[in-house]
Length: 299
Image (tube, rainbow, N blue to C red):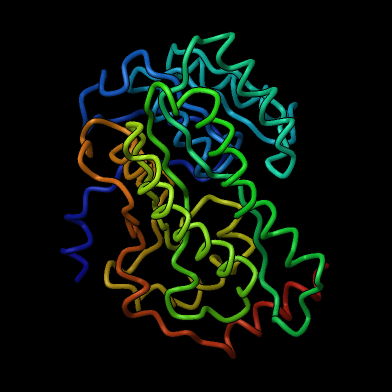
């Protein structure tokens, strides 16, 4: 087993929200040459790594979230690492007017938009009985309404007449009714359905709509909030066929594939990238309740 693990060639990654110190290309470096990607939640975690990998493949990016200072810092890192342009814009995906302003600024600065990555999300561990009405609504508004709002604005402003690619960052939570995740699982299930509906409706306009559904991904806020460190310490990842968590660069590569001409005949697809976890991992309610209790004690 150790020998098999040693043979796995994992892409470079770092646990922090910093750019990679080295990068090995598995696709042509000009795969996204001179394209423009609009990435929500692009200032940290998976979104930041997607921006970096896209930029290393010739793409200019717009990274969007509510924290402009954090975005500006991220944009400086991304530009320095890739030599491409990165525009930080402040938006709240729950507020369509802020998205309209950001998309207008993107078109003004870059002249076009080729790719939309809907990555903005919110999540935490909580039993359904303890989940407030407001907390459930907030996650649905960010994850589901935010995905629809941003997709609709970008479609109306550019994709309707010029075509484009949308990739939604989903999750596998709803596939087996994950404990303590009714809010996020419901939101992501809705997004998976939205991916298929929009793929059907917008396909005639040259718009492809797909999704990536990550499993546990190290170096992310979600990994920290959802008990990833506890799972590593207790060797819970041994139940995953690949016996490890994924990394952010792996998710960026999946997104790159779906956003590029490499997947030119794919639309309405949900690409599961979780090491096979959704097939085998136990839905251990007792363990998850223990993680939730320990987190509450620290708050």
